[in-house]
Image 1 (cartoon, helix red, strand yellow):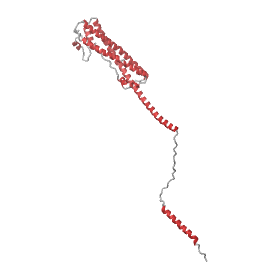
Image 2 (cartoon, rainbow, N blue to C red; image 1 turned 30 degrees about the vertical axis):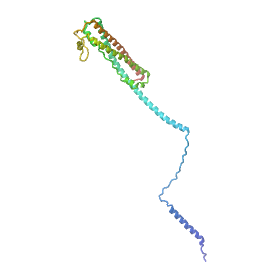
Image 3 (cartoon, helix red, strand yellow; image 1 turned 135 degrees about the horizontal axis):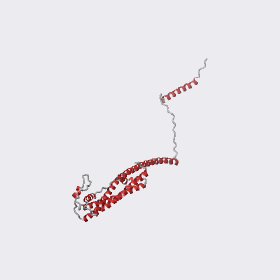
Image 4 (tube, helix red, strand yellow; image 1 turned 180 degrees about the vertical axis):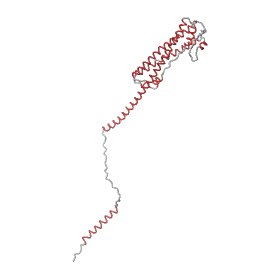
Length: 287
């Protein structure tokens, strides 16, 4: 006879198997896993530790910042100096050109004044020798032209810029700046002498009108404003010797004033030449 199967041993195993299956099913239902769920990388978290900076680090950061600002400041100064030096040279070039033009003008005015002084001296000699009756044509001509004198006109555009726009601060050579100021200060006495001459010429005209015929005077002027020498020995308004001597005396005043103008303008011309030479020497200007 076959022995009966031991159901007691097998039953718990079957029961356990069923429980495991239920547990597995419940787990599957509770935590479904999507088919295309992306994988999450295993990222490490780094925790930065902040250490307090040492004083050397602060110092170097400050030094580098200071160095950058300082270098920028130096570069800006260099650019500014370059621009100012170019302006300085341009000012002096313009000044030299104007001085050279002034020399040409001075040559003309000095020659004109010297000729005028010579004519005044001749007028004085004729009257001093009491020859006014025998030299009427000469005396009328000399008396009519005696009061005529031009004025000195110089080029002062650059010097005015240097004075009133702060241009003198650009001139690095102190000796050049001093000589420029010294040169143009000579104009003061020249302008005063021209003022004196204008007043003397006005006084002379009033005296001349009491001796010389104004109608004859007017007829001696040409359309281009030059003075002619009469040919018909025109008569005087008076033959009073003292009246002629007063004319000679006033002419002597004008002659001396104009001789002084010649002297000061000659000095002014020499000063202009010396100033040109100094500027070209100090700045090596090529004009």
